[in-house]
Length: 129
Length: 129
DNA sequence: TGTAAAGTCTATACCAAGTATAGAGTCAAC
DNA sequence: GTTGACTCTATACTTGGTATAGACTTTACA
Image (cartoon, rainbow over all chains, first blue to last red; front, side, top):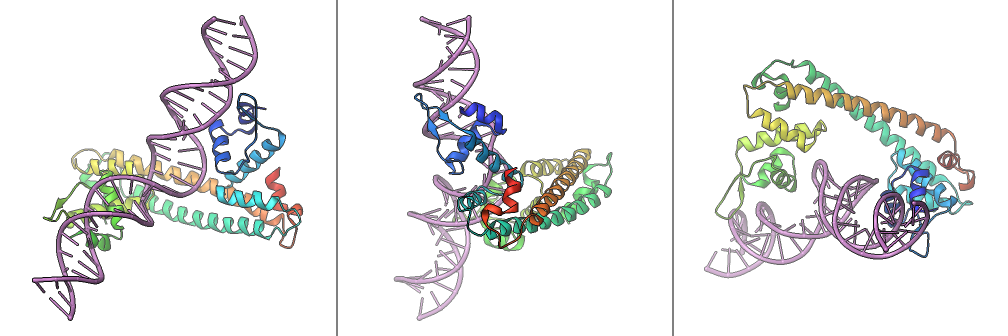
């Protein structure tokens, strides 16, 4: 299949597919006579894997490591578990930060009301502290 | 004061201060004979305000709007309240997304254990679904 | 007074993970 | 034969900084 079809089947844009190839996430595929990229089912599976990983927030570098790991089926999967666990710790940490931020923002919302003037604005006063 | 002192007092790096100036967040300040930037207490206050806003996750564009608004003390502060409320909605939304992500990640962690081989890895199996 | 070190200047490149565009070539249908 | 859809490469742009090179200014010390 050509890149347009792969794009539709995977839900990635054409640009993104080419971008992943340049980043060595997707290996360079065969080309048609007219220099069009020709993909097969395996390309689609890899792309879906990449997309899944990206939706978890893994970086391209991390996904590259996962893809490398997958090429050695008999090695230990420790690094995979480790990556996911560390990522979960990071996400947990980020949630905590955002919750604190939300608290701060809610205090700011309470500190003012519409119909005030800028010079009386409770939000700005907090921001100037 | 020169930029190094402003940097220490504000906690922003020298590069960041110059970056904010280029982005029109900090207005161009006076220069010494040797072309060094010379700041005063008002620059420091503005910079602290910017830093505070950035710590809330406001974008440079949004901060610029706030600074513009501050220049008209007698106008309504509606836009300020609106900005913060919308930002809180976004943060709330992001927290929900991250919580869902954390759930997914925790399922993945449970799906595997160390000491498995790559071809048996529960995490990779989920990622390949 | 000379010089070395510290501070500052501008301009440019880099990061992540794409997105957007221009300008050219290819392919299929009518 | 030509129109339109598709694809190609290369390049620039996004965000919020960070890092660097190479030059200039100022300060400290002998």
